[in-house]
Length: 230
Image (cartoon, rainbow, N blue to C red):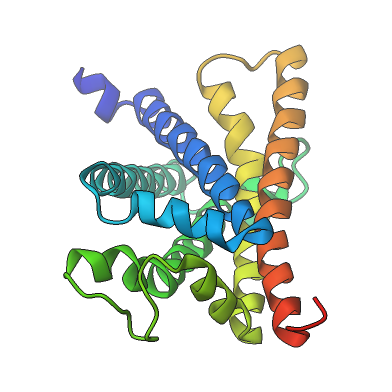
């Protein structure tokens, strides 16, 4: 068991399992957010169902643990890889064949994703679930913590938030395109046949996630520009 936490393969496996869990959450969150595009009532019903109920709080703790594990092991693996290279940076081997830009910059992309996550927690979690946990009935904007549709509309009506979220989503797309197929490579699906397949699946999943989240941002941004015509 100790080898799982101390060996290079074990650490990569932990990264893969935590990454797979986070991808599944992204797909769930993406599906939930799409409901807001088509029906504010449906999205708010989902928000009310989740809220600060025990199962939602348990899920939040598990999700936070998954993010923490993934980020901590990313730091550990990055530092060990740099030490193993003896100070040689990826930039010095930029012409290496078969190495994508995303694979060379996974840690930087991960940092951008984490910063975007912190922004997301500030804009949504702190004004929804946290408000309910504290026993309040309205958030700092004067909205009900279960009125997620109004909060989305307010947030993405601000052009700077819309722009920051799109930058975040681009970084997430690059992070997923490499991380998703790398996850399968870690568990042994790395022959030429499966490598091409998993890279294709990774591009599809990353693109679907990007497009659906970006759709929410753009729809609510443009609705704010023409609230009566859109």
